[in-house]
Image 1 (cartoon, rainbow, N blue to C red):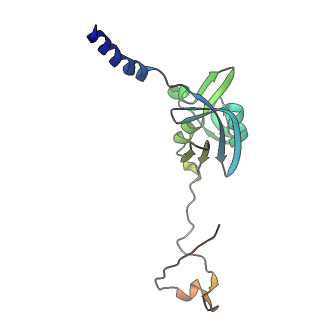
Image 2: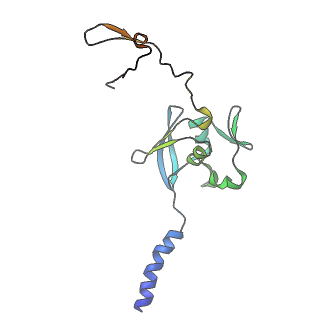
Image 3: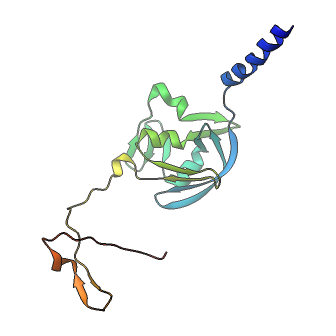
Length: 166
């Protein structure tokens, strides 16, 4: 009897580990292209953010089309073998895995679980590169009020310290 009880106690964690994760309904704030959009309802499952396809368009201007996830002429095809990772139907709604899509398009995501904020950075196709490594010229006063321009120090090493109160 003790052996059976002990085996049963071992089986419970193993059984729980094999059950699918339960998605929880949340109210989320998505920051995409520096614009915040409240999404209610959203689902969070295993760290993935699922939103309705209508909310996808509202928050990101992307929409799901037969050729992929598109915004104007820009279109990202979803891998056919992995479509279930991005799209699902539940509760009479079509849901989209926005964090899964971000991973697909090499887009960094920052998530604050306590506040249910999701920030999406620049996609891989949006990388901004510097036109040059030359700093723009500017002029600022020193502590005594004397003006100095960055160009005054051209060719010399300088250490620039900045501070802002906001």
